Image 1 (tube, rainbow over the protein chains, first blue to last red):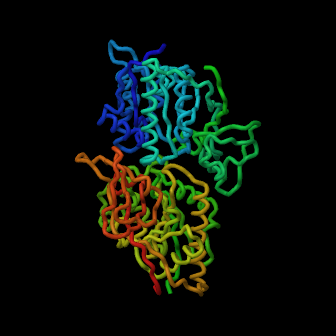
Image 2: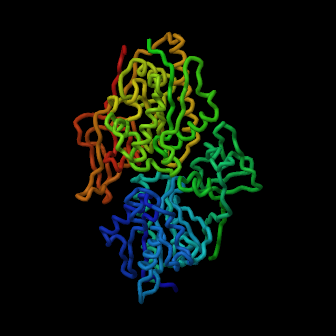
Image 3: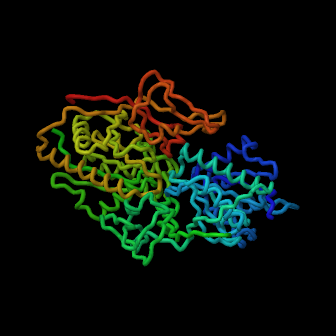
Length: 293
Length: 293
């Protein structure tokens, strides 16, 4: 059985995602809230300089900097490349193993409720996800495989994952979402505590998983400028089915653009502010029911 | 009678308020949409460099740079101080009078629907506001006196005002709000056209105005960090009455903070992202019915 000895909670990897920033500040002020008897919890702010500026990042997206090459390249001089190395050292101090768990707190302008973003199919992560979604219907589980060293903080350890909450604007605190996220963090920690104590008796046997299949960009002109917006009929409908022929975008001239795929998909990250510059209007997923993991 | 000869539509004075940015780009591509037979319409992007970066501003808030001192001080070197002078010249070319109308397009994370922000009580502005709010119940009218040279772009001419739309996150296009804002701009231009043609026969005699009375900041600790969030019961309730004793904030520890004023107020700009750094959790207004203006 995997024993959890140390967990890390990271908030503010993106400096304008305030839910995680202020939850981490609260946990730093009241460590008892996140300490558990069978494991240590390390709490840290991901990108202090970006938090101070109220921006996603200073030079580049910190949550794409945890690559093998980047972490080993001492020549990289951007703020986030340097900060990624610092975080790696905090998570993996000399003479200690790497933390066992990373809980990376993010928020999104998409209507994703309380989403768990998993990068691998570790049985304990799936059990945790099944448990959390069984106790709270707002919890959704998104699977997008990311190998260790792929650049994402959560990919740095097997039991790394993101809690992605929304819809909330960048630079804004939503009290209700703050409270729900806080409760979800406690539920995660309590689950690991009971796991360590051998008290997880009844396991959930089915889990609904939204599996990544690709991304869609906005229609763009030859200069790369967007020519359309998320269609009003699709806006805020993350995790709902999108069928071939249904509206996807509305051009600035008022013309509908329809989804021309061949099968039903479940879009998420619909209209995430930070993804305009990444060329992503939404992620597409397939809905799957998985058993006996 | 005031004749309108030239109007200016400005979008993207704040680079992450995309509704105005993309409306202006559309109007630049299709000038016929905003041209009218009796007046010229100048269309321009306020802060191109901030738009490119997807940020509110580069060095400082452009919409506080239109001060008498700033515009006359050739030593100021911030990007926005320089850009304010450029905009002034575009609005006031040599050998021509200043534009007669400024329509400054903004968006907010607060739930302000389609708000008109007026800085003075010019009878034509009040007539326009009464007309617009009579044809669309989403239109609300906010009055906050700003003298010419106070720093705000809209204060640069008597018939200057802001169209402030929300709730929409920074860096996000909401197609429905885009369409509503576009229709509102056309209704404004059509009104001035009919005004110039002497075709405004029936005048509205009453207008509901929300008059600025002050601002409230978030509770903060001695280091200036916020200690509370907008209360869930107040979130999104812009323009609704807030009575003494009703909840205003929720602290990170979960304690309610109540409004301790002596009379009912109507908060707006509730939880506007850009105002955290300005020390503003909301603006307070009084609701007034005005007649015979």
